Length: 252
Picture (cartoon, rainbow, N blue to C red):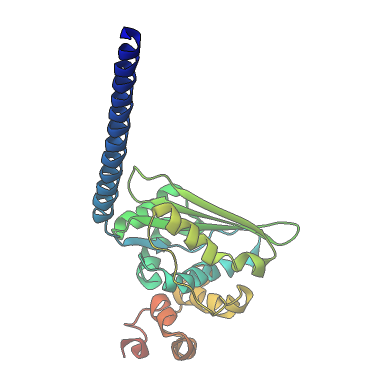
């Protein structure tokens, strides 16, 4: 009889213990759930606002012995300026503002180094400079673009692509998409229009060369026809490339 009583009370105690443990476990799970919900709610409320990043584009370095590639020195920043029109948080300095400092920094060699490229950026009070380089390969060209910070701290970003010249030129949207991702800013806005080919920019690049005297003697203000045609088809690009003080059409 005594053994039966002991067994009865022992089972009741065990049942209460198990019930208590289940209650504690359930409470802990509920507490964890509400804590996580609060955490995510608070995290969502503390999203860092997107800030604009100002950059400058430089003429590309090209091999001195490859005169047939000289036009690509200007075609590079032309297509980059065209591409960056779709960038939401990248603000580019107009090329006509950059060129006087670019000419001073590159000197007679018309070649940029990391030091001279960052000097231009610091003089323009922007955060980054984009320094490109074109070299010849057996199958076409190799393009290398370095985004260099004006001040010490951020790590430079590099993009490279080799292939036929127009195939390489098609990758400028990828250049800025990857750079935007690297900076953790908003990507380029999608567009249905295809970027013009690099070779289709050759005449405009040569006109830009004459305008600023990059490889040939400078003839500022004498590209009226070129600017008028470009303004009619791509007004933002015309304003990016040419100085409005020399071309009245750009002041409209």
